Length: 202
Ligand code: HEC
Image 1: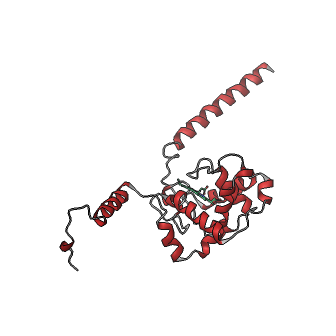
Image 2: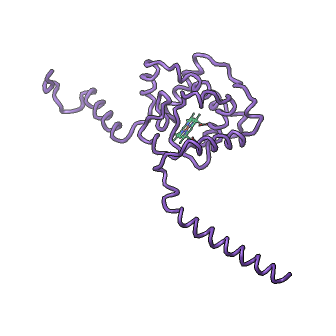
Image 3: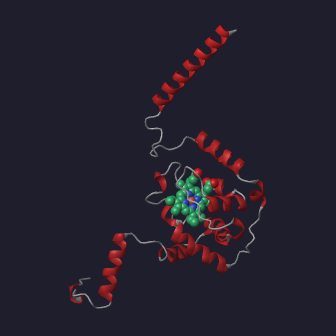
């Protein structure tokens, strides 16, 4: 009996050491965000995430009635807080968007648009752990109206107009270079700059 336990213990230690060696073998590069996740990984991750969303959120409808004003408000909000990663049109084609692991998805894609309202709300309020998607909700979810308004805006993204995108550009956060250019332009326009208007050739 004792001998058997001894052998089992030895076997266990061997497995442990083998497992550790295998993990070390696979580890280099494992945490790089440069790779693109394979389709099966995306499918499994989305499935697990769906299962991990509390069911009462999945069943919730958007409590805020959609209107022109609500959409305009959410559009401002999205341009200011989300477009750095997601782009004004929701395509995810930004400087950072494709470099996350997983990359920022196209929010107009049927995969995202087929998610329930409550699931989109859950993602915006609570974020997605181990990805670049932050949690935006402040306070308890019952009081978070902003995220519900953003859900309306995400539904609207497939039909967004070029005029709306132009409007959003005014709300996008500026980079340092853009801010400096803006300041120079403002200075020039206010006439405080020495640059003579005659130097303009058309
Ligand atoms: C710092 C970058 C970043 C910002 C800012 C950001 N997101 Fe995301 N978002 C991500 C990434 C990365 C993903 C992909 C996560 C994944 O696929 O698991 C994502 C995914 C999503 C999704 C899709 C979830 C899904 O199931 O695939 C929605 C909806 C979303 N974001 C909404 C928003 C909204 C609304 C805002 C602004 C309030 C915002 N995001 C701001 C990085 C960002």
